[in-house]
Length: 80
Image (tube, rainbow, N blue to C red; front, side, top):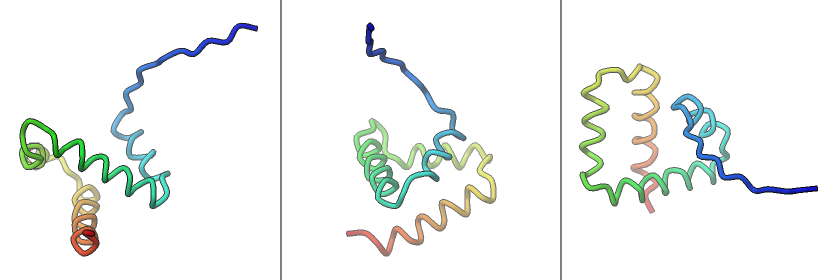
């Protein structure tokens, strides 16, 4: 029997990434946000530029806005 390891580059669609996030437990979600925070902290431009771009698209749904608002609300009181 021949066994091979094959590297595959796979880019998730936004909907797939959202589903993966929803399937994570709380510890995994914390790790996700910590990693996201680290990655954005070393961007060439500050995170505010990307947040402004998201806002300027004017495509964020009511559900998307609600999620971000709740995330910000809960996160501000939990900063360690």
